[in-house]
Image (cartoon, rainbow, N blue to C red; front, side, top):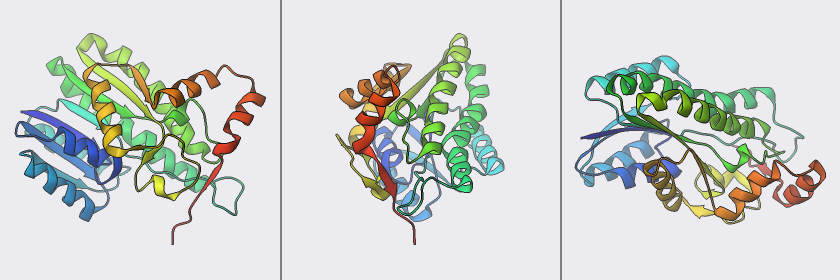
Length: 256
């Protein structure tokens, strides 16, 4: 039986990954904060034959995450771990930049929780000489968003961490893959008030991430035109980057 842990599995890309990876020979560990949505995803995967174990807590709760991973590992070896949990926060309509508390919360959720998850699962994989670690980053890692600096920093950190971890764990037979989606139609994306060119569905994004994982691609991104535009923008002068990204400025809808 293939055992897979997915963080941020209650909606969006994480939920789509869970549904597409579910099957009679799969044991799924689904992590998220929204209990109602998480259990709905679990029910869908169980209908597909998967054995499901839900972990409903904030991924920045390090003790809770460690306890969950230890318990899941005790029931059987973990084959795949997907660090997908993330939040979008940034400039509100009436503010110039995000505040420090918001920035720290974003980095803790989007970067630190993924590092925690990978670090907790890697020792068992090393002992068995096999495993896959997938980190879901963003095109913002290559073309930082002026309206969401912390989100951009966290996603860039995932790319750097993933590439370094890939090199470190390759001798142990572990594949580390970083996927960098562009705009994806998700509940998180719905608070993004601005242009979202070439947006894809969560189902499409999940298919592309799974394909990259199976092909063991170090770094992948989509859609293709935006991915390579973002990569090449790192070599462009600043004034060109400002012009190119001017139409992508946005603000985050304030929560009630």
